[in-house]
Length: 246
Image (cartoon, rainbow, N blue to C red; front, side):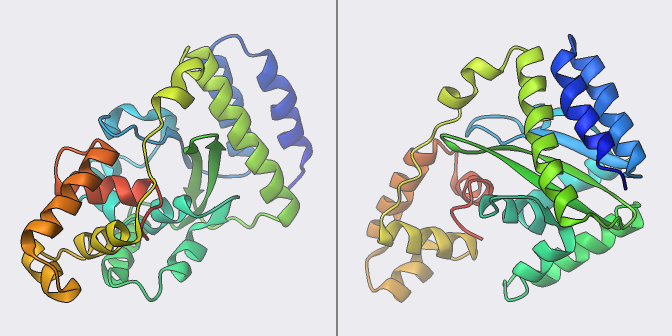
């Protein structure tokens, strides 16, 4: 592939006056690289509806509905890997990173479903800010090989597309301040958070840690307050999205 198309996007995107113009330029670039599907997505704030997070995108018909109905976001390796990745990565590499994870079979089933919908492989490019992960660009479809240079340039494309869309939709100014949550956890809180992610009850966790049920509940309430979560399930979902657990 010619990197000139990427460089052209980085230049032209600065002059776009509307989100529609910017999306058209991004799609032109992705078509050049033969990526059929993509998404520019904001990382959720604790109280946000995930359906409101897509700034731009195109996915296979009925795939988003299936993804939501089966709650794939909780085990999606490409989403979970975003929490620890500093640069772009390939979807299949994310699967390898979680090969020892207790949820690896569910991850495999999810990736098999994605393949059936035409999402054979792809890449995710994280966008970071002062408060951590702010969003990402995801591109996919048929398996496409990107060189190391192209991977680096697509990291720049992700940042440019994300921030220009935020600017053009007048969301950039408030993003950093609004997205901050207190993710500083004590060692004990992290232990309990991981047991919670494994689906353990307060009673089961208390037996392992040799503390009382009430003490476990007290820690869980503290974690819930820190993340502004609505319930235990919301705690686990947010912990995955923020990269606190993997």
